Length: 178
Image 1 (cartoon, one colour):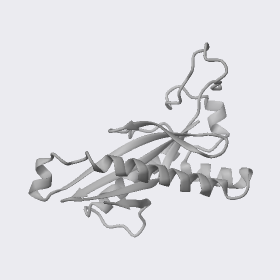
Image 2 (cartoon, helix red, strand yellow; image 1 turned 180 degrees about the vertical axis):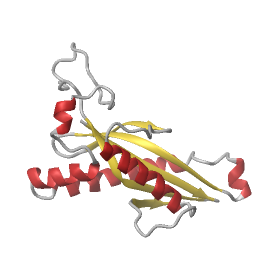
Image 3 (cartoon, one colour; image 1 turned 30 degrees about the vertical axis):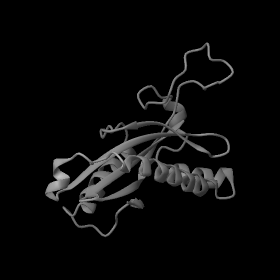
Image 4 (cartoon, helix red, strand yellow; image 1 turned 180 degrees about the horizontal axis):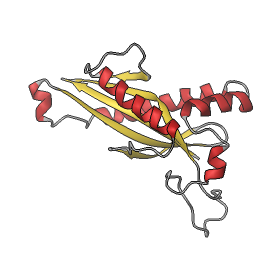
């Protein structure tokens, strides 16, 4: 499986703020990936060609995944994985900060800019996350009620951070300000 993480970047003048949303999704493949047998067709999880039966019996959202790993992996492994994911995201954000919004005419006008990214992350058996893809415009349609709920919450929380709406509960976690 891979994990879809949502990263929000907000730029106000020269300051960039980076947030990870606690909502997200696990994608499952229809066949196992085997490094020892590269002659077979390899499927990278996309969400479009998933093993539905397997998916229905395994965690769908990131919250469910974290609870599942904590319960069955023992030792707070889910918490450990997401601590490592946040570290990886901070490293990516430092690299992003050098190019995001630098040439924008809006920066000079003092307006607020934002961008939502979808990042796909794999994890190995030692819970080491590996970034495999960054999507500038992540898919916000849904294929399940759980997915609809967390994507709606992402949009609501994004508008809340930007000051367009008011809410007491926001599931974006600040991971870095530069």
